[in-house]
Amino acid sequence: MTIPDRPHGGHLDDWLAWLETLSPREIELGLERVLEVKERLALPPPARVVHVAGTNGKGSCSALLEALFRARGDTVGCYTSPHVLTYNERIRVNGVPADDAAIVAAFEAVEAVRAGVPLTYFEYGTLAALVVFARAGVSVAVLEIGMGGRLDAVNAVEPDAGLITNVSLDHCEWLGPDVETIAREKAGIMRAGKPLVFGSASVPQAIATEAERLGADLRVAGRDFRYTREEGDDPTWSWRGREAVIEGLPPPSLFGEVQLANASAALAVMEAIGALAPDTVGAALRDVALPGRFQRLEKHGRRFLLDVAHNPDAARVLASLLDELGHPGPVLAIIGVLEDKDARGVVRALASRIDRWIAVRPDSPRGTDPAALAALVADECNRPCLVMDTPGDALEHAVRHSSADTLVLVTGSFYTVGPALEWLHGDRTAG
Image (tube, rainbow, N blue to C red; front, side):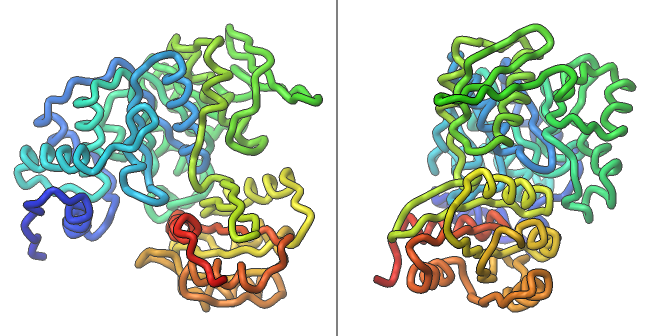
């Protein structure tokens, strides 16, 4: 394959289009390439680095850690993927997405030392994020693992602590066919003698075994830290770690019981590395925002709910959150799923909460054909499913042909939720 010349201008879109030509895959597991180019960049490391891995909840936990560090006065770089609306979301400094110029300058810095080393889209982006953070002088870097852990590009950066949110089946073609095999890959972010927080009470044996082998400080939900809800007119919650106790906390601004579990794990990380500042936690929890994670909007006389749930476990959490929300009217689901995902498992988890379905094509070459998805929905739910090409088409149909008490849910993929948010923010609707 002939690789085109890199962009000579300063346009981020041109660079991103060029990066897509460098490798047939966005992610190619392996650390050698990234380590070689990272060494050439000779970047000064932040004072603290936290890795965030897991099947679901990585984005929420990364945002919570980012807010907790910022509230105590740190300058924080946060790297996540994929994005919902713009690439800039992947690279944040103190909660603000990097601007186009900063990202392009970072790409240029990577290219200046790459010297022909083949990098994937994700590897290039990871190195660019590190350049942005170094130039901004961040004191803390929160780095979300893209896939797995052991061979993910982010793991080329030495962490002070790690957080694994949970482990379930996803990316099986890359990581393995069962939970224990996937867990062994995620356990690759552990380091000898350093803390690793596991955000679920159900710990795969592979995690426990690797922690014992390395001598890592494994801290497990329900054993080393826990939370308690305190009901009342002004609901609060309390958190208890190995040493610290914090009471009277406000709920996180992110909705749902699952976010208390995520916040509890993030606080365990802060305690483990000696960065817990109890007086700042409440303000941090109120300051967290994350597009596409049970995000609620009211526009065009309708209520919209957007969530990027793209595997059965995430869909089960979404179903539970729908129960918590307790919407009294009908629910219309607009769903688009990538072809390498367990679409049937996602639909099955949501089926009892959905009254009407529309299948769409995600904005990705890997998107499942909407007619095939609609047939799957009809088979699983024993009810018809409309077929439309884009999330925008489906949203326009929903506004035109649903009652005012309908909740319109958009789910199944980042590549479905992103275009839906663009449509909603653009105020495009047939009147």
